[in-house]
Length: 297
Length: 318
Image (cartoon, rainbow over all chains, first blue to last red):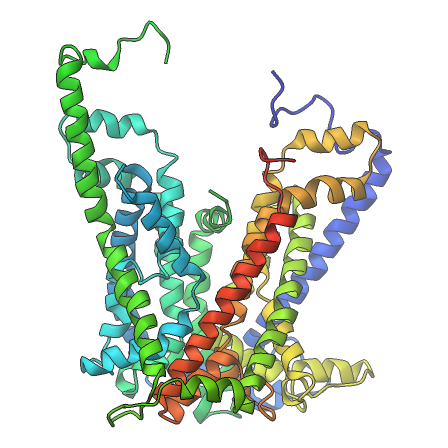
């Protein structure tokens, strides 16, 4: 039987066309991609080159593309002028509480919604998914008032506790992604374990979690990015400079050195670098994971 | 399962009786555990979404300054918002204008790039990663970078335009250009949509293209009669998610323009933030939050409604 994926012996895309035409259009496509890539990279490159330049080079007209000479002064002086290492430690503290919380509670929910049969399951899942359509900002002020009443402003509790409740609505995207992945695991594995008297918790821990490492990695890394980049929440809840995250510290730095472009570019590079490295390490799984979020059920 | 396989009832437990007991035990267990394992997510939804939305409405009926006790004012905040606050309508206008520029722009660029990537096999992974890179830049860093790129005197764009003897612009410092400038900046992050589109494109069944070719159709026909219809569910997804995100734009207003110039970038969430944390008017900020919720919900519903007309699902064809 010929199915959708079956390839015919001749390449149907070029069949009927003269090979020359195909080669030219392929050249055009590659050229467009290269131009697009350069446009994408230009701001990046601009950030990086400026961070290694002194004032005179940064503002030279016409613009210089390569620093001459390279200087690391912006990194040395700029980063010393504010406790960036402290911001980094604060951010990592949040990461260490939030990422496991999201991974654990979202995968539990995904298991419940994707692999267990219980009354009301689909209704509850639908209602929770509708939370994704809700503008997060609409709950910002009342949630702030709630935390304020509890005396927890200027602590990390408002920034971390929601993660242990499946990300308080926002985590449903992760639940959805994990659920999609869990559903690809053969159900026979669960059935066999249940016949041996295993509980759902054991099936979750000993069958589903070990087989779902790629999906958990995707959710973990994207959660890491979200915490790293989050600006609005730390801005609202944290006012003590000693508790600033990197995003908040960088924004404060922008306020202090609004015209020291070299410093600003160096600091921005430092804040961008770790997430970029992390992305490169896991890019295959991550890109596949993003693709998975767009799939309809 | 073929007929020759042992029926599942014979798994050493004898005939139907014990098996049914086993099954109902299993069902009871799944019922208990299912609800239990979903409980953190359900609790989170109630505590951090339903609760605050209700509280928001109630607080919206009060006049409340941080540190003082609230006084009940009925629907005053809501009537002020709709009838007597030019800044509110300014922020609604700016936010919608931004979303209407930024989302289609990002969709078109993302879709175009995905189409190109889908055509070439060589170096596809390389380009896909390249186009995704801007998405990785933390929003504060990207705000700093673009503040400078858009700087009218010293920025990258105007220096490039000047050296090419082209007219320059005030970019984010001009009342007419600030929102288009921010929309262009957001389109720089098209990589996320492009990756999702690319995955969708790779799922389009190949035989449909072959059918077009058999009928003598060319590249345009393939795009128009196969690719676009098959991609409508993915377009819908990106459209909805993009809209919800764009309507909540905040960081750019806070870090780059402070709502200016002349309140032109006083986006809705920034206005909520300023009302609550700058002016300490909690009641009014909550009313504004409800307004935002109603508008986002309405737009989402309208998109889904219209989707019935233009989204094509394979297997439910007419």
